[in-house]
Image (cartoon, helix red, strand yellow):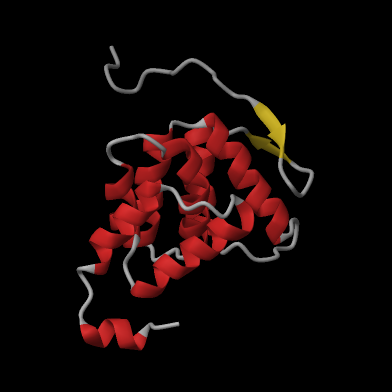
Length: 156
């Protein structure tokens, strides 16, 4: 009698990967996390940076915004993924409006002072020019963490 070595039901869903070969499909959450931890938002062999950003937008529609925000903070803090975390933070602004944790998210996603400028540049370019209050309040909280040396080092 095997207690732990039981056969699991088959849940194979085959799809084609970017190279045209067969692969297993991922859940939307797993696809978002893998994208966050492997993408530098630059041109790759099978896709351009614009295609990568479009894929990020499609994944963001399918997953819970709270999960996406936590994944972005994890990718930024633990793995140092800057550009993709900035893009996700900019895209999340429309999904986080009116949420209580939004300003805390924008506080936590900022590690260096220039992160604020990168997120704002992405937001202004791709999402609109009116900056949401959650971004303003989160950046105000994170701005207080930096000392004079850090601000002068990363000034733009």
